[in-house]
Length: 141
Image (cartoon, rainbow, N blue to C red; front, side):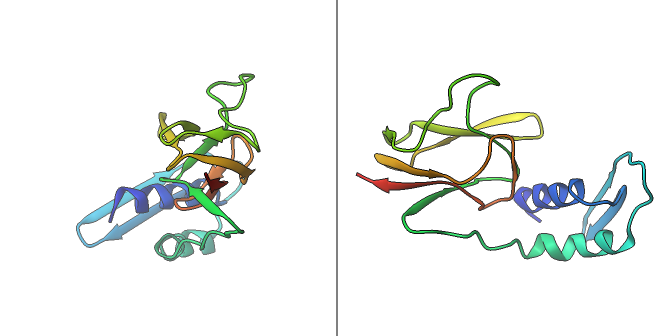
């Protein structure tokens, strides 16, 4: 099981109504729990491992898309209240930071794969996104 699979499983658990979960696969075991005001639902716990094995396909529109390199929280700006890294219509250089992804309290820069113009921002600031989810649409220049 890869780190990305574990992050996906954790994100799905966090978004579910379940308050505890135990997942075992061959020689790998993972136990998760959280506090909640309601009793856990049995169906989401049983469905979580199967859902992590088959993540939803990203919806792509026209143009090239920068996708999430990991499961985490998408941030459009370096800090709350700061100007975003990029806006629609901005021309960016290859390697320029276009957003941040936070996973397990670690910030990861997502960079432009080539010189391009940003056509659309596909996520809202602070959104929890899955591995491979579309973040920004761009057109190479």
